[in-house]
Length: 438
Ligand code: AMP
Ligand code: MG
Image (cartoon, rainbow, N blue to C red; front, side):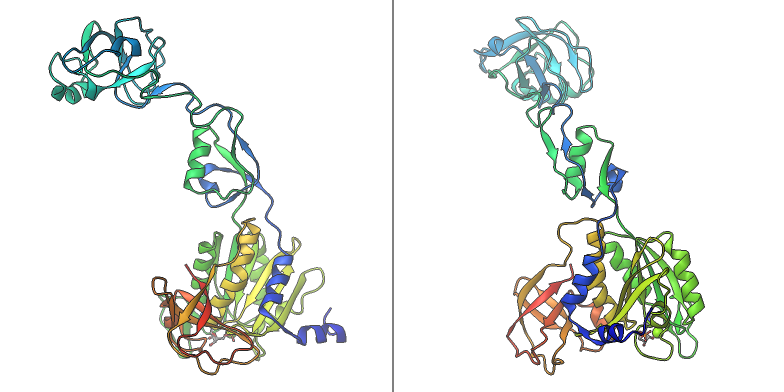
């Protein structure tokens, strides 16, 4: 499938960051919606308009602990001449049986309990003697005690207007009203609303399952001792964490040796559980660049992965394509840890978020004043330097150098400083655009 003059020329050209990103996003659609339990849908995008089936609150209820009364009975109540009412019972939250209230009567009522027929106001317990026959001081204690004896009395020291301390049925939302629109990202309060209106499940774009695998015969799992020439596999951990951070369900596959057959069979095995595949390493022009060798040579049936050079530093070599019977997107990132992470942030994160149908797929950017000069940024390439951003001061300070092996500097950065293609140096104090890594 490769090797035509056209194809070769095509692959030889240098792609801009924007062109590569556009190509990736143009081939990615949101995942088919599924019905999820509310908490499993957190962070996901709703694909249905949700209508309120029953009003909230569903019934008039008390907003205070106190006494349900007829407002007319307490209209003239004062501190020295309290209204004296007969307490005919107790209504707790969740109570289904409601005594009707006649003139001169009251019911002790708790917050959230239904207002009984006949009552049109609630007098907070603090405005009464709590049915003790004593002053208001004893009322709080009395109110939390055992049910008040029916037939007892309560003294009400202040008038309450009709409707006072009653949360009317439908005062939050009414039946048939739209609750949430399709496209809403479900955060805690949206999930709270769905639960309140009785929804147990919702239709959303699911979180994509991202399979991360690193390649390199030099790689050893953290926790294990290094032999000569070996290093610990950090990329698969960093990228898996980044995939989770982007909203995905991430699966880390251990490092795969630089062997075409192993890589091929590992990818085949992983396809079944992947909505997107991410590899690191093996995409340059070295002798053992097995990802490129293997994936550039797939049969038409197996898929197509294109390897290209980007006008970008770090992260020049990138592979992207669709593989397997379901044409799962695969992004092959360079192996240097900073390159792979920057590539993830720029290309994989947006791809994950596009699969989720999120309205905003990119990290936010902001201008900032660069506190130090940047000398000799490569001409013709967009450079992403690691930076420490001080939001209060509006400044960013480069951390570490441009080397794509500087893992520690990356860990101490919270931003990427963008040095545009045609800029070769940035004087101290100049304004730059930065990507906020959150
Ligand atoms: P490659 O792209 O495979 O040629 O790798 C470029 C550089 O990144 C080499 O120095 C590798 O040892 C290093 N590297 C590749 N994969 C990883 C990884 N998973 N963790 C840490 N370093 C890596
Ligand atoms: Mg390698």
